[in-house]
Length: 227
Image (cartoon, rainbow, N blue to C red; front, side, top):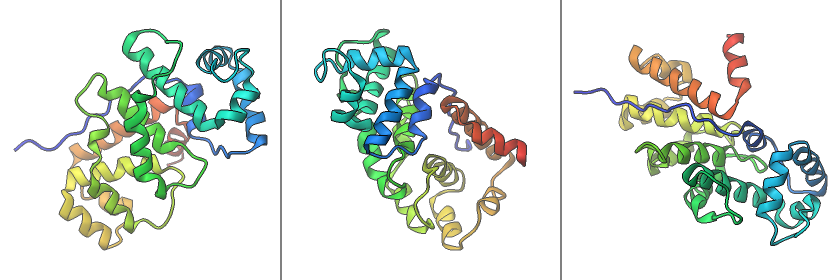
C-alpha cells in the first residue's frame, strides 16, 4: 500500500502583498494612512490599485480608495487581479472577484480561530488557489473534520495558516482516528511529530519550507536557525 503524500510546491507569490496578509491591519484611519504610504512606496502596486479602482476614484487617489473600500476591499480586488494575471497573462481593467469566491468561503469557515486584523487564512487560501491552477490539489485538501479538530485548540492563533497546514499533514499521515486520539490526549506537536515515519517527517518539513518560501515568511527560517 502506498503511503499517503501531500506535495506542496514553491509558488512565486508577490512578497510585497504577502507581507500585508501576514500583518495586523485594523480598520481605522491611522491604518489607512500607513497603507497609503506603503502603496505609494510600491509604484507598480499603486498603479495596479488605481487601475482596479477607477469606479471609486477616476484620479486614483489612494486615500479615497482606502477610505471607501477598506483594506479588505483592496485585498480582494488585488488577489483577483493576481489570479487573472496568472490565468490569462495580463491584468484586466476590472477585477473578476468570482475568482476568489472559494478563498473567501474558506476564510469564512476558519475565521473564528484567528484574531481580527489578520489575513493569514486568506493567504493560505490564495497559495492553495495558485497551486490548483496547475495541480489537482488546492483548497480541497481541507475537510470539515479539520475544522472539528480546532475544538482542542487553546485559543485563537495569529499564525493560523501554519496550524492549519499541520493539522492537514498529521490527519493524513496518522489517519483521522489516531490523530483525534492524540488531540484528546493533549499531546504536544513534538510528541505527535515523533509518531511520523522518517519519510513523512521529511515530507512535512519540505512542504513547510516550500510554503514559507512562497509567502516570504522569514520568521519560519529564523526559528529554524534558532533551533
